Length: 452
Ligand code: ADP
Ligand code: MG
Image (cartoon, rainbow, N blue to C red; front, side, top):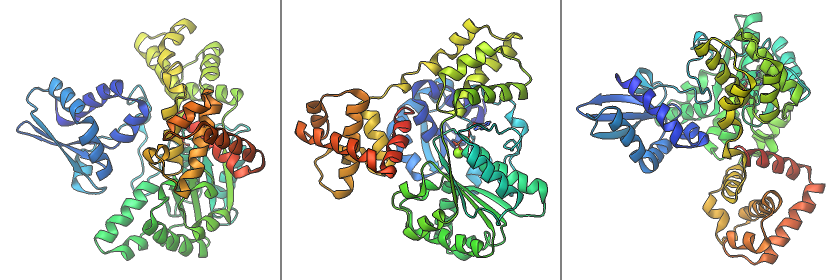
């Protein structure tokens, strides 16, 4: 096995050992940098991943690698910054959501200059009541960049089509006017670009790469939260482009007002344009999406099967695709479409995975992540002001989603009295009625809880 095959084999096994979310978080963009004299150097995208892999997964990784190749005696981790030799030569990127790897998507090549993936187009983007507005806005922007809605800000939960829509705009602009300069960048990549340029003392050069762009697309902008220097530079880039009537398109998992630690001037810039949200797809649209995707792959599944998937997977279009891909793989291997009974068996662990059940830990984790806090902070006695509200929200969820007793909730949060828990629950319950922002935050957090 060469080093890349070795890593793919490892990833395949790791998937069965840890949760999907953890896998996505810690193993994305990892690879083997080198393998020499029994020592493997694993490349990771940042220090954060390095620490986690070293501290939490080292044993598991070693065990699996050693089983695959008993010559391996030691492992090390190295950060491979984007563009460095390490990441170019051997980072294995993992499409974690496709249970069946390399399913046809390989034929699409991501454009090096624009970072756009041609597979994301308006043609294959299914429109329903849940995404009608953002789709229409995106289409309008693609027909007339810089002139209609600027910036355009699209938000919604994971796997609901934000990236697809953003990239579709970029692809459409280029189709219409190939001479235009379009650039798509994830906010992580944008941040690391800034950090690197600060380190190399060439921030101005970094910024100048953005100055002639006609359409700038930045995905998952919530990750800029708390990164002051990045926000500062982004603000300048934003202004330069904005003043020249260049189009800026942003996405996030939440509305601008709910991104904590976002500079006020950025927030108000975002709010100055068009804000549209993608909510959850209804049953009919879920079936329509499955139909479109199976037609793309030229396989006809019965309505019964498609409706079975659509009625069981409700909150994530990427998971709908994952389920379909499993059935497609079965069809390819056996040269026949699965019956409904076979489909049920094949999809059992997607549909009935324990992920769909909430528990106190998931609630605390989801609330902490949403408000950019450490889980530990939520459950200790700290009276810090910024903790008070998230803690009350977590208590509220424990009651509402799990029917936990108030004394239990009190104990869970650093041994507080049950009256504190009752107070928290009632307070949030009342406030949700009158405070639209809070209601929205609660619904976004709830989505996250059931995703973990
Ligand atoms: P997000 O960026 O919101 O997490 P993505 O854009 O990556 O979600 O979408 C996840 C998957 O679902 C992608 O493969 C995308 O093509 C598909 N998808 C999402 N929305 C639609 C839609 N309306 N029509 C067709 N496919 C969709
Ligand atoms: Mg995305």
